[in-house]
Image (tube, rainbow, N blue to C red; front, side, top):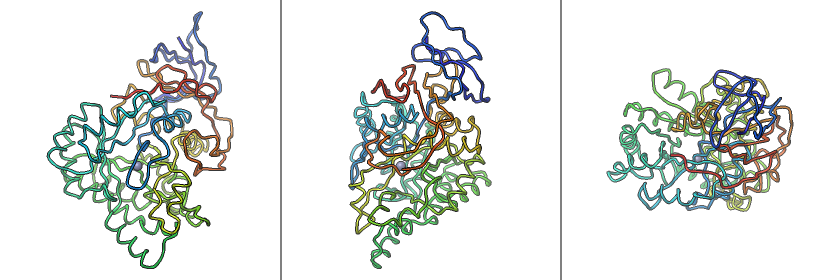
Length: 448
Ligand SMILES: [Zn+2]
């Protein structure tokens, strides 16, 4: 048996000083005090927080599209995840030229044996027809609990297709999420900018202003209302978008949503940096104004969001530099899977804006509930998987790219000082990260 002794256990009911006992891959006891027996492995967690492993519900590892292939594959991405206290990721399976089932099976095969944290897949719906509708229940049977549609970019589908996708998914009970931006309006804006010769990074946020996000969110929520089924909005980036969500909720719409560290910490000022440095921050939706950042932070405090995830989708500096002279040629996305847990702890718990229980719900428990993983994941309960993080609250560290384990050669959070540090991580009872070192890789398993 392994005993994690006398830590501050972050339980759904509150923080309790106590001990957790692990047998094989499972939590077998949670109590104020557990007597150690000869042969037990004892870990002293006094003065440290003990949390259920983080769940990052939005990663793009090993993703290839017309532009580029992400710097992180399943190996490097999940190593970064586990080092940062995330024990389960949900990655996107894209069936580009295949059926849904083929796309899912291909990604399962690619990930197998190469992941250092547990994993699951969202299924992207890149077109909608009778064959896709017939396959939806089959991929659910094979472990998919969520679907995503895009309202912009080359893989977007039209409103009727989105409506029909929601109707087809509804009987399975799976989650339906959308990337909400008005694709046609982005194309119009980009064309206007090209005509003016406005091709530097600073024009990126102007090519997809908050109105473009808010309009698409409104349309997607309404499509959910028409289909009489709840919807989920990924990576909310703006105050305008947030207004739409809150307005529709007041009117009875069922909508859940997420945001990410980049929208809570960074602003569009970063696009003004010289020498192509602004290109590093290109992602969609873009970084917004300081006012948006503050409104989103306050919304986290008010409990508007269900999850804090990353949209980790990283490229190297060389890949980002493809957009020199034309920002639309830069592949969009930022890293963050390793930084998320500690950035959010520092920003919200260390600062006293939310308590450790709310933090645990945003980073682990509610994601587990939304994506069919609870109570196996997302909680320190008897019978749950022993996915456990031990966090030192009183250490300060400076974030630098050379400390991270992803294949990014930069971090958007370079030079930030954070309070708190992930020391140890257990994955289904395996003590995979010990004193900030990855001692057991590739223990990750697909989560049905
Ligand atoms: Zn994404």
